[in-house]
Length: 418
Ligand code: HEM
Image (cartoon, rainbow, N blue to C red; front, side, top):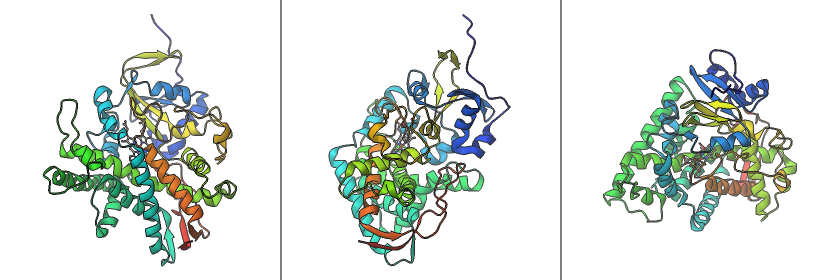
């Protein structure tokens, strides 16, 4: 029977330019204009749906309704994700590969990562003490490259740290760029994949021995549903799916340092050894500041939801930043307030910093626990172990720059261990 489509529609031929211009704010501003949480638009000359809010997020994460294979645009695959990784898998193949990622999350791994992170911060801080000033974001990327390689089992010589830090960070820093900058991101991925594929071959021909508990070892010897080993290239993509986003946590380390400075009242709640307060602070950093603007999927088959028709194969964007700043989802969402987690209800559909829904069945971030550890260690370290001053600087960020970052990258002076 004919059904009228009630989905609000944005007028105009194409909104790609507005998306680039408005960045993190594009979906919420358009949705506010149309007074809706779900609307149809046109991006790159094609129909697309935009969703925000927990109800729409629950729909988006229904894997019977949306799929991921081939969905990420080519430039994103060429820089951020790579080809053949878990992000583009569906159904049984996805669940099987995802189980490998989720299996890395053991209490031992958690303890090891916390320790690695703290030790590396302390070690590198000795060098910062001799500098007139430190660019915290740059230092955070190096710390995380060193921690990530140790944790994953990838050998990293001291003289390689700078180059590998650049390669790993350019993959996420330049993924949203066009032209020459995008080409640099593409080149960084290609070099990084060659680097890791070479290490994978060494593990497989036994010229490099790595402990069996390391993620590198586990990915090298993982078998797919047909019982086959993954190709060297796909193992490289998956190992980079651990290294790259771990280094990307430098963005949140920068925002965390900025928040400690800009919200002294919130920082004052962080008493030594009070881990819940630290976790709440880290949680609020992930909600309040922008990182991933949205995540994408495509409609699996025609269906209707709340009298709105969703057409098969249509690109669908779930607004992360907009959901985190929607007044129906959060009390005074534009205030930085870690105490909100004492009284406000959060769910896997309104807190979407690293995706929503289910880890095992869906595409929610496999590294959320890694991020929580990194942020907790960072906040505690900055608050209780490092002496530093922030000189006058521009800590604001642009909503059209993806990923957003404090403009000054957080400059510190008079840095020393307490
Ligand atoms: C900087 C902090 C991070 C952010 C903002 C972030 C964000 C995200 C987002 C938004 C998704 C997609 C969710 C979706 O499409 O539904 C995702 C997926 C993923 N993330 Fe993260 N992530 C971060 C850190 C990490 C870390 C540290 C790791 C690994 C150590 C990791 C590994 C992954 C993997 C493997 C996926 C794909 C999961 C799948 O397709 O099933 N991420 N992440």
